[in-house]
Amino acid sequence: MSDVKPYQRVLQRKASENMGEVHLIGRISDRNAVLDKEVASQVFGAYINEPLQMSPKFYGDGSCFLWKVNNSDESDVSVYKYTKVDNYLILCDPEFIAIGGGDGTFGLWIHRDLFNGRSTKCPTFDNEPLCLTQSQLAENSVSDASFQILNMELWGFPKHS
Image 1 (cartoon, one colour):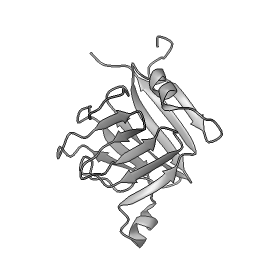
Image 2: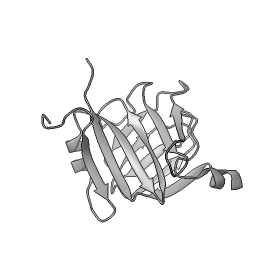
Image 3: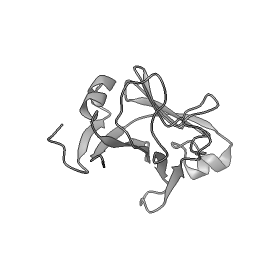
Image 4: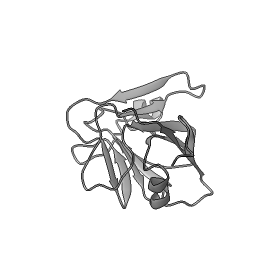
């Protein structure tokens, strides 16, 4: 992937486009990435320190994190750092991509169709469901929320030796 420059967006998918996980993984297999989703005005995602690759087990290190924008002017961002409770950081399966886990949950789970996902409170990052607003979280104690992806961007970063 020599045509990708540092900090270059390597993929952008809008709701009208259909793209499978094979293309996604093939495009960023030699780069780190940031997953960025917008769901009904909610913007959230994850930083992963290793390329997405099919694996039967979790991989990655403590530099991974989840994040979400808390307001419309994007001045307030929550970052959920690695808690060191477990090592459930990145899992890439033919059916889904998951970031964070534990207790049968995933902090961020994306279906292979790249349109559907779920965010759950997980021990790896001790996060709230990323797709819920602060008012939704205050109204009830939701610990799990499904979402549909309107836009997705992946950004590549150069690996440091």
